[in-house]
Length: 541
Image (cartoon, rainbow, N blue to C red):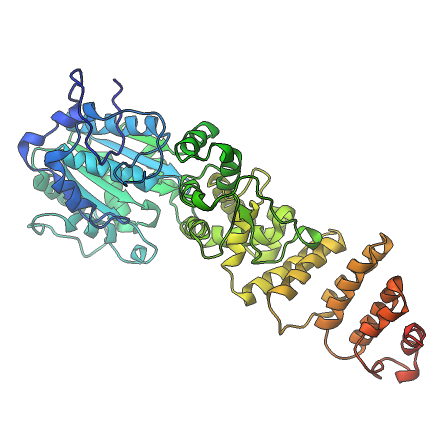
């Protein structure tokens, strides 16, 4: 039987051949184990793990399966999917720790791929085996507070540190040595497990302590588990690189789920016929996939998606159908996408919004021009979003992800992004029709804004392109939008003349769609000048 385990909340009767692993033998007899601190996603996990110590499932008794799924109907079983190797690495690390050899494990992976779930699994298992477990979670706000992560780790201790306490100055070697010595004293002879989630948000002083612990606790029963994303703007490459050079360090790299794992989950949820759609929409991201499976009750197989709008740019906020159900901008799938973007960092989130607006026209250079973000940061953000499955291999989001991202923007922000995107595409030589589609989307998203001269000319150029292709109705729509969006004056009169000309494609009566009144006198020559004569010729007799 492999030394691997899954998160199991319903006891499974062990077989007669089940053997107790080092985790089960552990230090249970010492009676010193327990979870200390408060994990981020489940504040009651520490107490719950302690309460379950007497009924915890022995590792040798856990029903081993390769693939699992989300919570079933009675909510009693939670499994981690496709993480057999990662779980085995954690199991071996704790076994080494219990046997007297310290270990450091760095859990990395894209946002939404189960890093926190893996850490919490270790927390429960280590507590059940009798270890003292101290937990902390980094945060952007806490990063500005010295020793914030260390304070969280010390919160769960039975009493305050008697001799040294937390230093009130920059970390020194003697301070770090004394602090760790008292932690070991508090843990007694049993294993000491320290878990830090979102370590990329840890303060500098706490990072210095964690680095000291990893380097100098080699002969102690100490396990240090650090979890953080890849490609995050707040990460410290020097810290993680230094850890990985240590002989006691191990790295766990979590990836998105593969087709086989998505298929197994879909079959378990009764969605076998939607496997391809589920994999395409979620990108293999466990968080997004779990949300899609939770929404499967309203899915209708074979439902069609709406066609994109003008220029390949569907109106913002339009319902994109995924798995047969319309994507609610405030629904579970959209919230899961927002959570992934938020945890990816502010820069990656801005890159994701720009990619959602540009859609298939996304390139790093255009995102840089659209957002003003430096090219290296744009490339890092794109890499993180692609690793999380929010962007396809081609670099643009799926329709459902795109609808979720754009649906979360305020009308003013959405209009501003579309208007900038239109000009960026136009200046980089993209077809006028494609660039003008963003202006049409902006017009549908909010009112009360006026087009600049460059934007008006872009709409008119797109209309001319459509007329050259014989698509007079689309040309007329573009010119009507230009006429409505441009301000009063000569520019508006000029657009009115173009609109009247386009109306001839549908017969003379199309010209009556123009607003009442002759053109203004702002053009040279006044009302009787050149702009008025062709308009008069187009008006119905």
